[in-house]
Length: 83
Image (cartoon, rainbow, N blue to C red):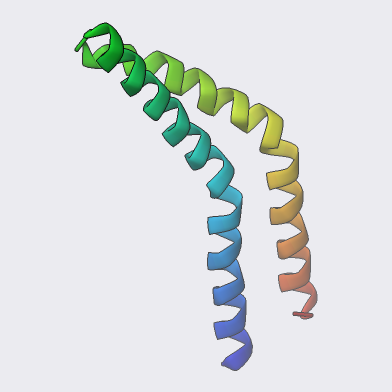
């Protein structure tokens, strides 16, 4: 039971660590777009979606191999029985 709890804790921490780069870049893109909108006084809410989508897609392309390697390494540790 203790091993299962430790494995669940590691899985949660891994999911946070893997998602942080993408979420942080999406938040940064939103912040930049919001500042640009407030400077130019453009209040259209649809303008923020395309740049954020492109930033998230680019972040997934760049960080995807690292994210996949982390998940595969965790799965290998989990199924081998070693923690």
